[in-house]
Length: 251
Image 1 (cartoon, rainbow, N blue to C red):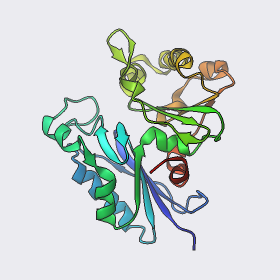
Image 2 (cartoon, rainbow, N blue to C red):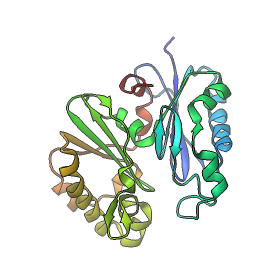
Image 3 (tube, rainbow, N blue to C red):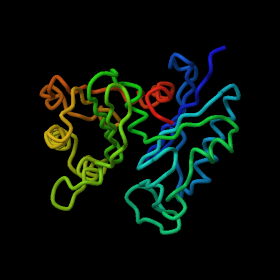
Image 4 (cartoon, rainbow, N blue to C red):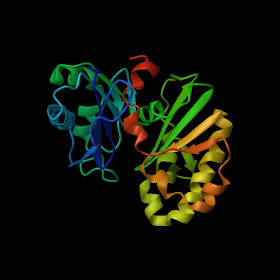
């Protein structure tokens, strides 16, 4: 029987999950569980346990989480350190609970199965990269997620989203959900085009992928003008990368 992988994609508003077989084919319908705040690490582990309990034949777990993740340890994560979720004030106790939290180890102990924990944009990229050249994954959602691949191997993560994009706005704020709602999709889509203009001279990618839940909000006029080396991919790819991530990363 094929080994089954539970893939969990964590966002600011909810957690999505699905079971994949060894070929990366979905063996269950994707599920989504809305998040309630405040959200300490133990609460997220409880959600994953619930998801894993519904699929007793799952043999391993792949989880993508926003923020800086190094070897399964949370260096920093946005949203979850805020008492009321995205856009609210950070809570010092939550920030302390998440900083340095070895999520991979704790999940393996809680589930009794191997686990791989990485940044959510990296998980998304594992599902779409061709495996040749320099490939950049950009996810558009609550904020901006980034992941860089070189020859199919995942490069060390950089939190580009925290770099300044315009005046006092970081890239996360410049292209995030709050700005999309404030500007409307047409003007926000022009910011997506500007984002590509700003990042291309930094990465000189061979291919750039646009994914995440808000990639489907890009206006047709902006889509028509995207260069040939930029590809819009479905948000479901975030879950689809759960199997391939074990080959493309150095766990």
